[in-house]
Length: 105
Image (cartoon, rainbow, N blue to C red; front, top):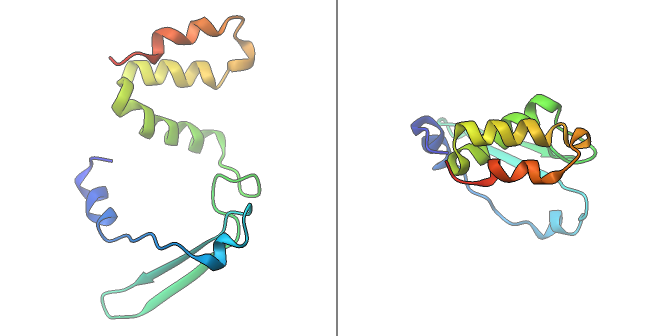
């Protein structure tokens, strides 16, 4: 989250709590409202946000999200190794094999 283009867009985003949506929990709804430069307001109600059981991410989306979150902390090599191990966790005989990837590069 340090790319200048992402930071510019993020500065325009506001997260606003909604009692209406909180009442629907545990379902994960969202209302997205975009105000264009000409004042036009576009609104959409997303009943099942991406990444929930009702709207799951595919494998490549999970890997991309994990990379975006882990790489700044653990570095490129460690994050790639950790993600590779985690995506094939059922094949690991010993979880201690994860330890080398959990240290900052």
